Image (tube, rainbow, N blue to C red; front, top):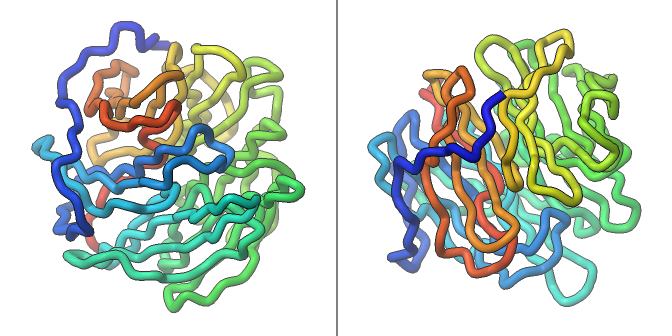
Length: 313
């Protein structure tokens, strides 16, 4: 277990220097982050100014897209297209969910929509380039996982009974889903059959819940957890059999997770006050600050979800 109190700052501070919709022009290994100004993870309206940042392997920062409304999950398909879940919220209880598709070297285009009674969170893509979107219901907090075909066709794949957040596929094509309300991580087989991978007993207290999910190359599931209230959130590691250990602790509010090809874990981390960091962990749990977000004016705003550009298949 590696507390993050001794994190080393090795990167740079983020400054917004451009205004406009920019191109991706990415390379395998580039890190993408959705940056939000929303005051909490439950979809409460903020100022509506969200960004997609790209960090090249040499540390150079660029803005892929700006002015997005509450961007959340990110995922790449096999052709290098980037998909982004966004949520345009008005002064009522409704939000209008849109999935954007950013082609290599191109501007965002609308790919699909999710019903207005939901708030889009995590996304994941399977080996057939089907996009899966976790959508939280406004009225009852039941979350539906929508499956979108490469042509944009939509159907319901499954559901979790609470506030769903992160999604991740294992190497066998099973989809894992975090349910924060019920402190449970569900496993869905490719045909949609749901089972419990780990339940409330896997988390430290009745106030701890799973947020972000990511698999390493060995099939271990890494899970960011959030404690209400507190400042001792953790990254948990589960073996394929569900055996748990603590990978890191002492984090203020970890969100999305992703691995690079070298096995380093990147974590979106939002402190209780302004800004946020992207942390990078070695395989043995040693952390450094990969990037510092100093320009997000909204409390509890900052990096939400992360994805790394894979090599084209």
